[in-house]
Length: 402
Ligand code: PLP
Image (cartoon, rainbow, N blue to C red; front, top):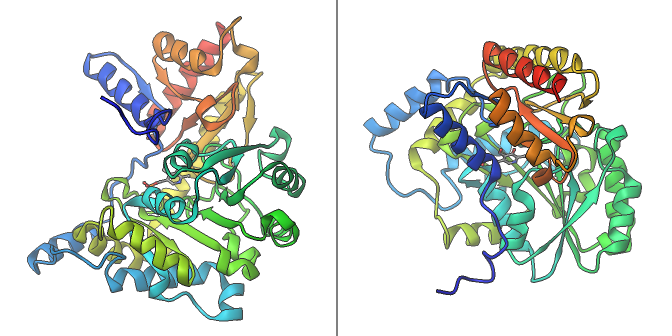
């Protein structure tokens, strides 16, 4: 039977598939160290758990408004405004009406693509990128235009690269920015974002373009450089930006599926329409849990952040011993992205390399190709220190034998 043109050529998520493969190997009794998943290993806060119990007792389990319960939207608006003080000072804080609560950040991105793209529109995606962006663009009828970035710039998009991409595209409609970045751990500074904002304002081909800023790793900051929200650096672009975030990474709530978008007027209405006719409002209990988790002070997550910082150092110290890995020093998120070109056997790409490492060294890392970076691989340090140390050591031992 015939399937739609829309789904042809679109793949499922490689990271989720790889994770399933590892779990299958582990079920068979094989000793595999899994450094492939971008999922915090920390337990969810007691506050979130208690809130679910309370919501159940109060029978708060009916349909919710499509764009989320007011209590949650209000907190999200406040959280976002606090990260964008310049914008808030200029035009006032975000309001609940600007928020759409979604099934994870993933649905917020998908909603945006569905609401924004016309067939054939170009979605500009700096590479390396989160695996799902190009396929989501394709599902929404768009065309992923990958912008190559450079290792020497920690793979951050430069104004020149953005300008050239705009010159090359026939229908530029949406630019995706992601800081802290999955898979590279790169973190854009205010000046770097402001320089991109200048191009987005002045380049003739960018005038009708939207910007999606995926800020899902905003709370996982590994060093002294602070997080900067895109709109904090470029407040004048307010009406063209949709900011995406969620509970998965910042509050270790991946399975609860709570994300959101914050945007202005007509776009927010369109995002709500997409959601109304696809999923409706998200799980009511998860929303109440998120209200409680968002009421926690940032200090409640300090321990987690310190652990991530230690883990990034632990992983880097071991990986550097391999000698010839090209490592991007991560400033945020919980990944190390590294070039393995030196270690590839003749005819081997990074996917084959990762398969070999999985089979022979029993450590799972994700190949860079689906992130738009051939010759690279990504490991996640969202796992306990012992497992991480063992996995990194196995990887380095395997590289020495390459
Ligand atoms: N954006 C990035 C960069 C991600 O890495 C992820 C998850 O891995 C998401 C968005 C979506 O996360 P969720 O749907 O769990 O909120």
